[in-house]
Amino acid sequence: MATVEPPPSASAPLDGRELRAWRGLLRAHASLCKALDAELEAAHGLPLTTYEVLMYMHDAPSRKMRMCDLAESILLSRSGLTRLIDRLQRDGLVARQSCDSDARGAYAVLTEAGVRTLDEARATHLAGVRRLFLEKLTAEEQELLGDAWERVLPAPGGCAGATPGDDCC
Amino acid sequence: MATVEPPPSASAPLDGRELRAWRGLLRAHASLCKALDAELEAAHGLPLTTYEVLMYMHDAPSRKMRMCDLAESILLSRSGLTRLIDRLQRDGLVARQSCDSDARGAYAVLTEAGVRTLDEARATHLAGVRRLFLEKLTAEEQELLGDAWERVLPAPGGCAGATPGDDCC
Image 1 (cartoon, each protein chain N blue to C red):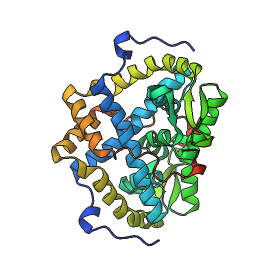
Image 2: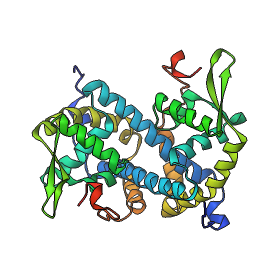
Image 3: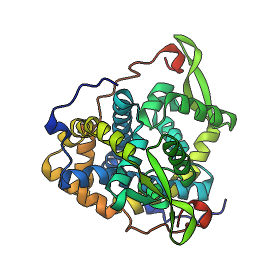
């Protein structure tokens, strides 16, 4: 496949410091997610990805989010998110709501049953996040991490590239 | 389901600093992986997870890794990894090798074709990691992140809990 070659310096091997920062991020994220997922599954039968989707909706105004904003917030394709929301809708934890500008279902709304499920799981999850992650960092390190993530994250875009078929308005 | 309640302080809501550090990690990881995956797919037809699996094997002694160590290194279940390795074996990028102590295939070995595929993709990937992540951080911040990840990561365990059926020896 045709690609534009990046300049050599940009594609040079990572040095030790860069490797520790980048691979450490990948490994720490994988390790934390596996441990937190296992805790949530064991205590509440809830996978971590489901917990995160419910949590983003819980914190959104009117407890509802556009499907595309949800897909942007977590590491799921739009089709993967659509399947997950289908399942949560069948379980009664989430409802779909249409947009004013579009007759198809394009918002996901947390139901009362969803709020209860989330409340039950949250104590387990937050205790795990503290024990496995936050307690390993000083307050200064937590601040620095928060600053770093803000620089790494792109400015909120709002469904760039979405088309009507994407279950997004 | 029966659960042991954590003490109230451990499960109190996260404060602003904790939220920025924790949610920022989740969002930054998701955003980086989506962008890097899209770049690798567009330029080389290679998903990021496949790239990571090939890369871990490339850096291992004799370019081979135990299946369980691979599964620990990335965010994949053992069954998900087994399916991915099946696919890579069909494509000729990876071969299976049995353990001395176990007749079943339990190591994955990078082939010469796997090395070539990885070499082609690496320039694209490293340029993306630099542009999207490392260049947003000072050298001191990279050091501090590396230190933090080492505290967050559990000590290497080596296939704890693996059973023979797990494609692991």
